[in-house]
Length: 328
Image (cartoon, rainbow, N blue to C red; front, side, top):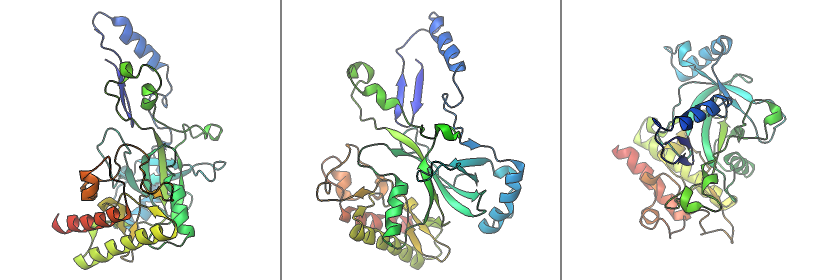
């Protein structure tokens, strides 16, 4: 078989005998050789940092992160971020270190977090790269961040740039974005032939988001008192957002609570949040359960398909986050 992977899943050909059916493999290789690098899966919006860019970023990163042994060869990527609210502008470049938050999952959101140096501003930021769900009724995380900022919700990170990752750095092609295609092969007729078992395959779009505030992970707390205060700050952000702008976070976890330089807690990663209204509250938007299972409420784990995600489920998640950090 020949398989094709993306963040929605994998599709493959029917079995064939490559020793006797040489034309199948040779035709595939011929067609593959005529694809562009982007069509083969390479991301053209990430390129190696130049020597000049590395020289500018290195002292700032060394000073801010207290990494005096940081070497130029540890700065390896120049990541371009397009802003959905300013598509006519050139994508801005950020010099990234090795990801501070990674995942080994082959499918799904594939979230990676980077401490990055902005080549235009000279500031350090936190850059998140992930694949967002592309379903009706689900807002982009950048749009969600703009609402708490306007409503003066405390303890929420300040948004920089945010937008879908374009197919190319060419502004004339900025409307075309990187998206999955696996879901297209289970639509329409012939479903049983293409997809035995009828799995729930969801579409994703590649997305990047820049936060202006640079923080450290929750597991780097200095005392149990600070841990409790940081989790409290995040819970305040959650409660105020729920009351003022009717948004439920729905993914309270260790990775989504950070500690600022002044030892305050902030709540991040709002891409799975839900805008509540009388017509949507208590209703699921898709079949599969989203969130970080280690910190989900007991009710959601016991009844994953029938129980709706509610405010109290998120409050219980704060308890599991606190317990996890204490006993780990």
